[in-house]
Length: 416
Image (cartoon, rainbow, N blue to C red; front, side, top):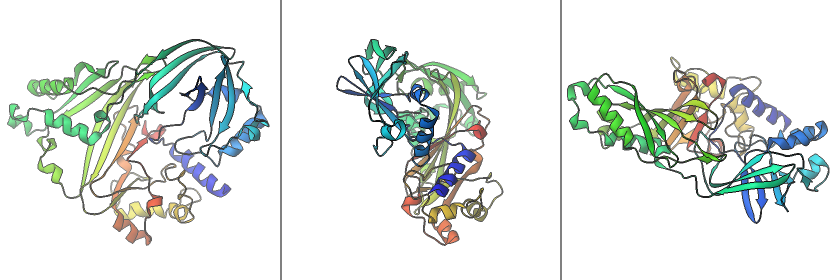
């Protein structure tokens, strides 16, 4: 087990990928309501070095895609006092006695700060690290005693369309008034970039032309289409609305129009959308490139991230690199058939994931980067038929080897 943990840890160190699984929040119980708190880092500062070592000893075998810490804290507020009541892993096993030597609750009497407690219906946007809750309670603590608090009910809401790349593209390109555009210019496939923001209720505002297509009529049409977009998600986080900023490219390519023969393409269809997302929660511009793969064929396909840029490499080169080339002291093929990647907690550590895309299904790579020019991951996306891979490695790719979700979020130093 220690060897397997070491190998998976090595994957994580090498690759520095973050996946689109929402991270577990800490939990707080108060007056019969369950609240969800951003990871409460203050707690670990109370632990001794020996206690931290015990926690790390446990965590090394229990990190999951939804909980990179490997544990979470449970708190309660009793008679206005804040207590730590348990430390749990994803199997609900209580680690308090193992780490601290006792199951007795601990008053957080040195905690003086503000907590933002999410509750109610939850939803997830791929560029946000945790679940977002429709309601939030703000509570100010002084030496572990809850004082001033304010309840913000039903502030956040989720919009499905902007988070579905295929449907989003269909909506945008079906909204363009193609017949009103100069057909001769249209043949040149002009491209305009439009900046916009969303307000506290998710409504599109502040629409401006960021980069001209070179043709005024096409620029006006791009602005009109963006200004008429439906409402986005509204995020109320840490006591305030996040006014998000985006950039939407409009490519005047008529083949993108709904019901065009492009949608009858017989094999693999790839759509790419780049948005600029300014999150004033972290006060940074993030370029979010969504590469959506649609399988229009009659067979299953596999996709993964290559260790090397794929340009100039054959399918055999790419399969050899993933399955049989050593990365450190291991081969991915060995990890699969030694049952290391069969664990539900380890299919997507680092580059070690394979995604099966069945007929008529989609998979989206969500690539988060600080520079629009960065194409680190875009140059490494592999798409090969499942049958070709199985013929090459001489073994079946079973369901349990495959990444289970419909999207994966990639970020890290090399992608920035």
